[in-house]
Image (tube, rainbow, N blue to C red; front, side):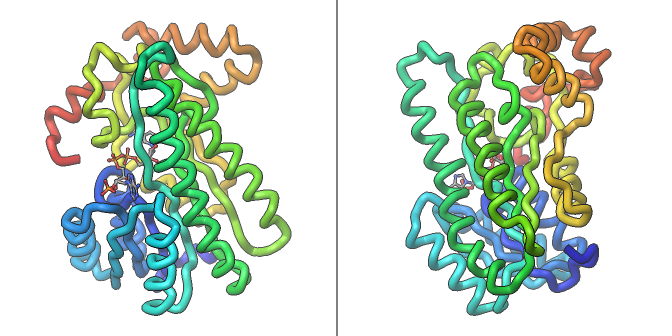
Length: 287
Ligand SMILES: NC(=O)c1ccc[n+]([C@@H]2O[C@H](COP(=O)([O-])OP(=O)(O)OC[C@H]3O[C@@H](n4cnc5c(N)ncnc54)[C@H](OP(=O)(O)O)[C@@H]3O)[C@@H](O)[C@H]2O)c1
């Protein structure tokens, strides 16, 4: 993809808040034209207005990505208005905290699969023919560090994030040979509303002292991933130590995950640099 995003059409799902909002605004600053999708029309309208203030042309389409009809209408609306889609950011999703033995676990897996995986599949299947006709484009899928190493009490989310990684890996190879690029982003804990319903004590233990990334950190990584045709981005880079340990052996991965539960070690590994997730959320009620 050309490094210049001016007038490139970027479709962002889950754009109403958190990482998706930050991604939309980051591309707006780059001069892109935006198509914004999420369920809540009010919040979407707010992000639309912020992006317009940055000079972007914007179409927002309230959409539930789990509905095939709604996704078809989203892509049709984008094509009617702009005639092309250059970048798809598959970001919409949910996350639940809870042990595998909890009564809600199976439902948590189903709901997360529905929103975060099947939603991604729906949107990709609708947008990919557009990119193929154009002969170019980029797809960015939002996974998580949890998509490569699961933590306890985060099984439902980790299952789905691993599935997103596998989906991205297959997709990248299926479109290889043309000018369609596929990137997968693996951010660590990020300060958004995603886990705000979880009590601090219920959080996956390695998260307890962790300082979250900001949505803007992740958004910058998304822009760079498209610009530099990155296949996989792990954020922050120090999280690669955990993934490398896990690749060597689950025993080493577990030792690093356990070590992260201790603040001094989390600090040395660069994962505890200030406020925790709950402290950050409490000090910024509208992330
Ligand atoms: N926060 C983290 O620690 C973290 C870390 C790594 C990866 N991620 C991933 O980053 C992505 C964004 O999460 P976030 O942290 O920004 O969470 P968030 O603040 O809760 O935002 C989630 C977004 O997804 C949208 N969404 C959820 N279900 C949807 C559906 N069925 N149809 C359309 N839109 C839907 C929400 O909008 P509506 O409610 O308006 O539909 C919202 O815009 C997720 O895929 C998440 O797995 C998050």
